[in-house]
Image (cartoon, rainbow, N blue to C red; front, side):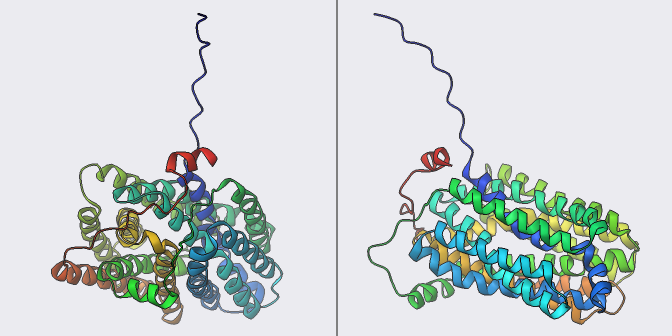
Length: 417
């Protein structure tokens, strides 16, 4: 008998969460890359810098509406076809931004861009819920954040570097990035299994919006993230206009805070070895409130200046990095059969709140950082209140839907990816 020939160890497949993280990174790239250019855009289009913040509000509004449209489509047509169509619509909007001759048309193009870009938030979350259940959802989300979180760090740096060529080049880069992501969709497997019996859309939606846990965790995540988008919306005006940060250095300040979000999201993955997602969520909320107190002191109290404000933002965004994946996991866990719709309602709620917070920052602009501090603290206070009420009134959760929502196990999906 001849001895068997030794075989080489099989190459470890790329985890699908990392591919989804690259896809999701288009969202923060679209938001953060042009932030250093807002003063330049205002000057070029002949408007006040505070009005350029309306382009962010329009983007968040389009994001909210787009997710409500794409969510039901995912549960009917699968994950990949809506993903491709959404990216194509995003490309149309990006080209419109590139060519916009006025603020009004730029706002409209940003809205179209967001309608298509909504797929990069809904699809990855739906696929994660297809492939995982329980605490594994939170672990998968932290891996996704690890890749996606690089975008908020490098995006303002890229935007600042491109300013020398003109702000329109920033949208040219987004056109190129979306084209690459469209090509990448061929490596993402279809994970949705069509249901033989499907309940009407309104029935499915009613099930979600009347389920106390889903509503609570969606609002906790939404108001907590809304405070972040208040900061994102006002960051350019606050850091550059009020604190005198050089636009070329804006990315370093913005990226430092984003780094705390990434690091703490990975700490959350370690914490999941010893604590449940709900326990981690409560601890993160305590830190979130602490960060809000520091931000209020620096802005409304006018104490500590930029260093204290940056410290408070670092605490807040670090806590958010722990809270976000666990709130998402807890909201989606019981809803595997309607993962697309659940992801869409959760995402659209968060985007609508983001639009509200971004508009509030623009509308209350008074030349100081105080409105930003008040708006951020208000969002965190509401999130903390929702969590407190939910804890006091929480009833035993119904059994989670662990029915496989994918025709292949995670290992096979990773191999195909």
